[in-house]
Length: 365
Image (cartoon, rainbow, N blue to C red; front, side):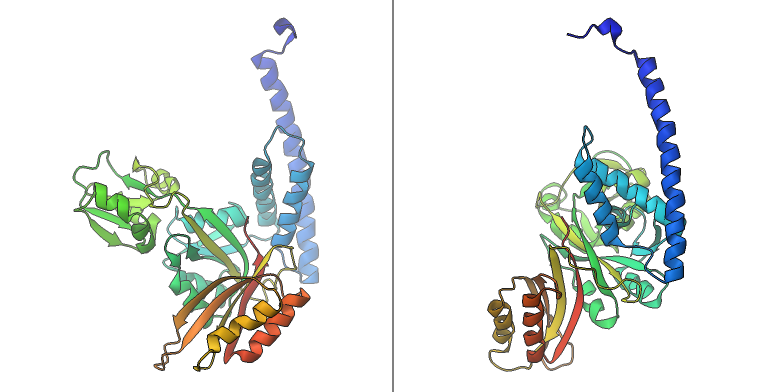
């Protein structure tokens, strides 16, 4: 057994850490200087400054080489922030997200781009799409689906109205907390949150605050911001929002589904970033319509079955042309660069009155 008298004391250990910190700082700045040179080369060549596939590649590489004791997910988080900071030196990426600060959309954006991105806060998802389509933001992050409440219909509609396409996704575990400017449930008259959050927490609200008005607002963070201004109001939002608006967390994780998740799509114009190369674990999203005749929807599924392509989601939305026609939003496994997927999509397209691929992108872990 080692003699504790020969072990370094706290002061010595801290001195070692301080020396390593200075070495790390020097190496980080060397990396940043190289990243700036990479940015100059990319600008001369006209190639994309932000390459999510390159970010994923680097993170996977350092995770594979990690000897410990740091855990893999912590290594990933450190390197994502490092690469985000270096990219900010090359050219800050402007990312449109749902505001105000503290939304789950912001959290998803940080997980994808890192906290050094230049976030533009929007009042709703329509504004996010418009910012990207107009070129005032290079990228946008929008909610597309919740595991409890289903699709975010407004986002689906906006894919039809803008040229934006999907280049990535984030799957976020969403925990809703009840927040208030003072402690205790007594005297809460209004609960403010995004409509989906109110729906996801209805069982808890009915049991604990049955007489409180449930007031929908543009985002959970906006509900938290408003709750900070009135002691009779409470918001449903994240712990990040509680910290941002100096609110008490009265109840943790009040959502009905303990495994509640929301998918966020990363969108941009095709000229900003083209369809990512195959990753081996990809999703292709599309929207189609078919002639209004018997068996038309069934016929859509035949090419997928014939070529062994798995469909992971199908949703219908009214075409709003007064003819009782519908658009179908479909997700399939795979990348069009794969021959069996390309064959299935080619046959499917011939059956459609309208056909648009919304994007092909790596599936979120």
